[in-house]
Length: 295
Image (cartoon, rainbow, N blue to C red; front, side, top):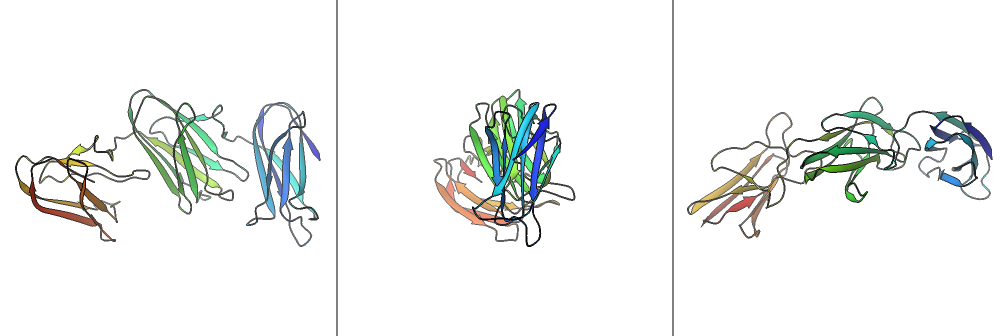
């Protein structure tokens, strides 16, 4: 058992490392408060059995305790215990870091970090697209993000287990407070990232919010990270054949596209997908007068 003193409120990272043939395999580190109640514990994973770290946010002044032990009885070996203080965005709702719409913030997931919590306040109903991307030389490759409402109820989770960008879209989100937790997709995923809460308008993926589409008039849009699709609506004033065509365009063109057509009763009447050419097309040769929607 080790003791360490905290003189002012601070965040502490403690790390156990082992090396060589005589090193302790899969060490466990436990942190206790001044009353000797356990705050947190963590053991080295089988994929990285020589290192384990814990981060404890906002420790109040006082004496704390750290214990190192083997994950299994009978494991023996040498190890090195180190500690450092630094600023870390907390993983708690109470201490969430504030972000603003359309204002990117850079942060990092460190070894032993359980995640970063952010809070956003909006003052009118709007679309919110949370995007987190690995950045810098030590970019976070493998990201999980979870959005919550003001009551801490999850609104959705998405992961990029082996990618460097994750997104989560909230369409027509009422004015209020929202939280977003960012962490590595696994405990071993660490690195730098940038977060942004994009407040740009997004075409909804619902029949009720379908965007009117004029006949014979191309419309440009995009599918971003976290976007589950765009819904459009066409109204025919007289019987007519109808053809829908979606094609990737621009520098960041959409390479694989799926479109689905529905009648006014929300019945799927056809679909098409591009396997890699960036073009999807569906033709209706039966005349209809009812409104048609498609995505």
